Image (cartoon, rainbow, N blue to C red):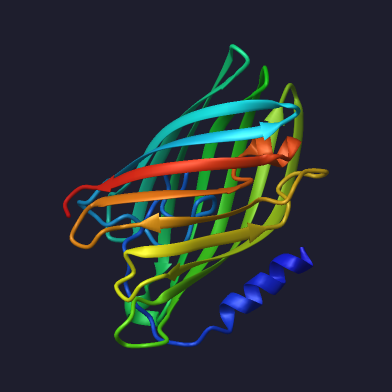
Length: 252
């Protein structure tokens, strides 16, 4: 956990002013980084969808996951989201799904940063086990400008609580996470996205991701790719996942 807070401090000391950026989607369909939600919400009247592929190498085998999800702003500060995944390993298939909501308490236009609370419920198919997954979180996101002519860096800090339930057994844990979206060119079309968090299950592995996103100007399309430990399978068994993501925002 101490390493997570080091990342959090590094993000927080960046200086600058607030800005507005398109809210991209996580691998499970809510607005955020690749794994964790940010405090941004989907714009009202401009729903977003995404499809992704993940390949996890662990336990001397490969897991292939195909997913589709999306988010919609049903009010100025309220987002609803959902996702469905299908995982295949050596001829066996598992299905996972998630639904969630996020409400923005503070907006950067008024306070200089975004603050949001949210929750999710889903079912994780995990190697012949059906696991109910409950999750609540609070996240803060701030934009930092080093130059008025460049797209801002965005940093996010979050606190989350996860509960897993299967066959009458329950496990819950608080964790923290930190991440940043760093533009690689002046207009922010290319960006480096990275995040790390403390463990979400006892005895598990540290979740993290790092990758690139491309969002061309005046377009609703977004493409991303990277590596890390983005899934419950990663948290339980370790290994590294490679992932790719394609998204589209309607109403652009």
